[in-house]
Amino acid sequence: IAGITQAPTSQILAAGRRMTLRCTQDMRHNAMYWYRQDLGLGLRLIHYSNTAGTTGKGEVPDGYSVSRANTDDFPLTLASAVPSQTSVYFCASRAQGGTGELFFGEGSRLTVL
Amino acid sequence: DQQVKQNSPSLSVQEGRISILNCDYTNSMFDYFLWYKKYPAEGPTFLISISSIKDKNEDGRFTVFLNKSAKHLSLHIVPSQPGDSAVYFCAASAGSGNQFYFGTGTSLTVIP
Image (cartoon, rainbow over all chains, first blue to last red; front, side, top):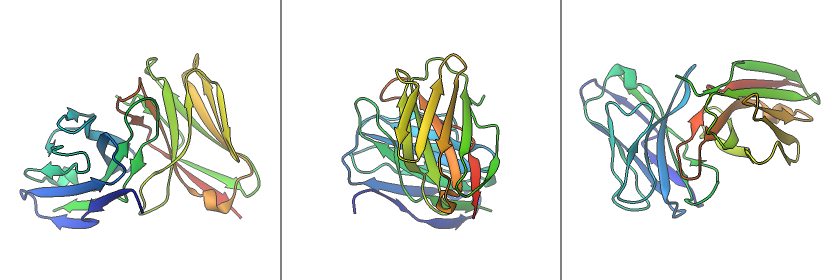
């Protein structure tokens, strides 16, 4: 089934450790996004990429980095995790050009202790 | 500062009645709006969209209304069904290819 695959689905991490959340899509969408969902704050954009080779900062980029080496993959890295990064992370993609909805993955639940 | 606001964190409605979910935005450059539905432990799924050139869009039981002068949109679900119980997010963007800003969500409970 075409869509977005995120890994891991859940992870507990010690503060200070490095963590990469993986995201792969097979819809050949140009644009990809990383959001975090927190209670009372909704979905907030961390980083985005409009096309392979380009990335941009969203609303809450600090402490996160991304790369977009190809169309399908958009990993999110926490270089040194902190407890405030405990959240549910959603990857999304969108076909570029004109309007269109975002397609979301199932989410990665990250707990930083 | 939150550019898209959903001021009602929760809403309860009887089965068969109308559910009205509201969303306000502050950025007058927003020209494309979407509603998403989210069940627990799942990713958000697209429900319905509207562009700023329209003031209404319908899809089955779901209708979205846009009032640009008030910077307000609403989602109507008629008739409401228990399976509609979920968290609903509105989102807005300015121009194609730009980032989407999401509201904080409204948790809808449809009581059988």
